[in-house]
Image (cartoon, one colour):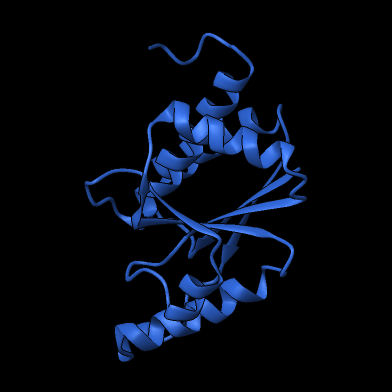
Length: 157
């Protein structure tokens, strides 16, 4: 199975970029993993939040085919612990899904069209994190899930 992480906009935080790169390297030991960065919307300061979400949504949806399983990382999603997330990942791996796509939206979240297309939504916490910080938190959790599935000593109960 191929796993892709779609991110809206580049990060300007070197420590986040370095952390994501470290977990990306680790995840690639288990599967084909790719990070796709969608370019920021130009002149976004001159547009409303809703218009920005619609434009970002169009770019996100252009990257996803109808056969892909798309998971939004969203504060309105289902909360899960690391073991349950590993179970979700395992179930998806054995289900025959060819492409599993996780999406981190922009600073204002997702458009209605993206919500409609999503197969599921996962929340990383009841707390709110910046869309930049979610990148490294999710990458670590994906690596943790693979380590749980492979009975490796990274995760401790």
